[in-house]
Amino acid sequence: MDHTVDEPVVIIGAGVAGLTAADELAHLGIPAVLVERQEDIGGLARTVQRNGYRFDLGGHRFFTRIPQIKRLWDELLGDEFLLRPRLSRIYYRQRFFSYPLKPLQAMHQLGALHSLRIVGSYLRARLLPCRRIDSFENWVSNRFGRALYETFFKAYTEKVWGRPCSQLSADWAAQRIKDLSLTKALFSSLRLCGRTPVSLIEQFDYPRLGPGQMWQALLDRACQRGQQIHLNTSVTGLVVGGQRVRGVRVRGPKGEEEWPCSGVISSMPLPDLVRALDGVTSAALDAAGSLKHREMLTVALVLKGRDHFPDNWIYVHDPAVRVGRIQNFGNWSPNLVPTGDETVLGMEYFCNAGDELWETEDKDLIAMATAEVAALRLIAAPQVTVGFVERVSHAYPVYDPGYHDSLSTIRQVLAPLTNLQTTGRNGLHRYNNMDHSMLSGIYAAQNLAGSNHDLWSINLENRYLEAG
Image (spheres, rainbow, N blue to C red):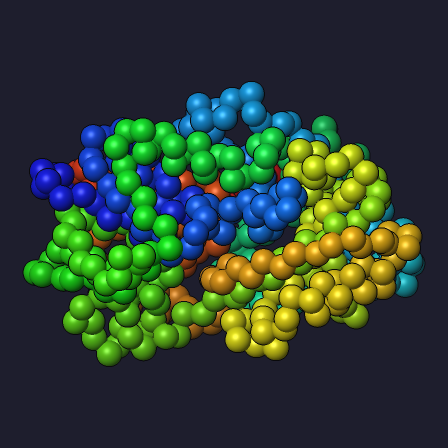
């Protein structure tokens, strides 16, 4: 569409995609109003500040293969980026395994019998591949063998998603694992290649004060160019007339309001967007209700002492504890921790909104996380001085077996609305990284100015983002 109307574009959500869309619209000379239901910006990638401590909701590496996004990052922060070494390992049976796996190292640590079982299972998968690849379990087993799947994929994946791997779509594995190859890794370990390939990036950029520093810089620039933002404001409805969204109903500090708009860019979860639209069909509502999300809790523990372990983050494959991943924020940036003799660990737990873990009181979550740090023996006699809890709703769009059909139904409902763009991880129901979400925000803004980008094709490339 050509943007010739005086009313602003309403952007739903001041997360990564929404903020980038606001900045791009400002660049195009199109006024916009950002609506954010929380009191902070950055969405799933925001930096939380508590008592002088800063921590991520997850860890967010600033690495991209998209030149346009790299230029934008450098424009906004420049020298405020730190170049950080990457170290992430798997913790399994009280031992550390490199991630991605180094086959010879893993076999040595697992022992001869377990290693032979993995090799035999892998050869069987190569010789007699499964014909029906309809789940994460089948996809990974077919590619790496069932024994390796059960050792290094099953427990952690089921912690994250809260369901058997047989009930996860193969799309999830295809998107996140992509072209990583056990054969290539084994040849690399044996030095049978002409040169040793780098399996994943070995370093990445990271803002000195965390990702929130980037989002604040992006917001400041957009506002300097005339864009507006309303925090603590929720979208309750979208007014549809013909094939256009004519207005947005909101609830905020001023109560209920209806704002006219010339277009909408939405990064809110697709089920909420469908329910907010006037006049949607029961089939669309059913499809929206079938799309699921997984929530995350971050329990940030402040410990005495600094150099407890060198990792940026650790994947915990031990089923005896509930924690799934542990971030060591001082190893992301020392500036996240106000003193030089403390460590801040982010203990990440995956759950569903309203379940027992989600509803547990903060003090009990801090006690549980403290006990699990001790049980894992990652740190000798950990001394926790204080803890904080942050709940993250709609953290992960779920790729269950029926999600693709539901998504198709919703896309058919949204397609006729010529001035509505959905963007970001939740607006596309796709596990996008930050750079993909930012690109979708740019493309959404450009589409409202007359371009014709296909936002649904972003992040469909075959190559894994961090493959070397």
